[in-house]
Length: 251
Image: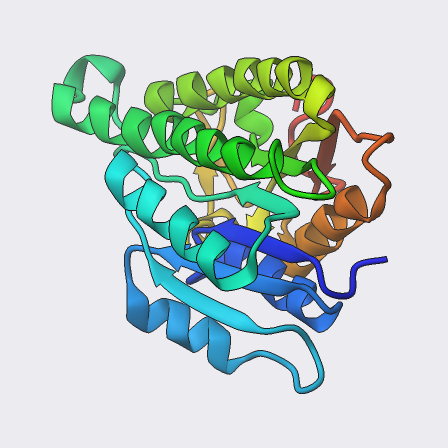
């Protein structure tokens, strides 16, 4: 039963975040749309289906703990509770050898992908553990990079491996508060950021190849499924990927 549930989606102004927010809204969730660009969030809100849940856009920088805290305070003040956090916002560094990356490029990825997910999880837990009925679900976007790197992706891959540790820790520490936490590892969802895959991307053997992709809507459906389960049941890890992408086996 999803009608009337409250969801908080980071990176909701485009790509997977937008697709997931729209599907949740269609299924009756009230959705808090967050991201740095209010214009993009308002575009997402304008796509909402009639008869679905409410859309509430909040400008937020996941790398800034004060900004995160303010967004969750607005959520609690507006809706009184929180049922789902989708920790989706992410960024990457230029695809260059790691010795050429600047400390600032490294830190930017860590701040958004890892620190941002932690800050949001903290605030969600603070709401979920005391609300009545208590509990809720946190879903972290891990990426297939949580399993295996692409060439020249040290900052992104490192943070996505770290997300796996964060997911396990939230799952363990959230048990007594009826807070479930799972991770969705996504491979080759077609978004504005990944359109390059349809033109050719570097492979581990040094070649460049076009890779199969899937739609962001298919990822959104997986997130909806994960949250459709009762809190006593959890999808701890899910991998959703384009079937023919070079991941399983040796390419």
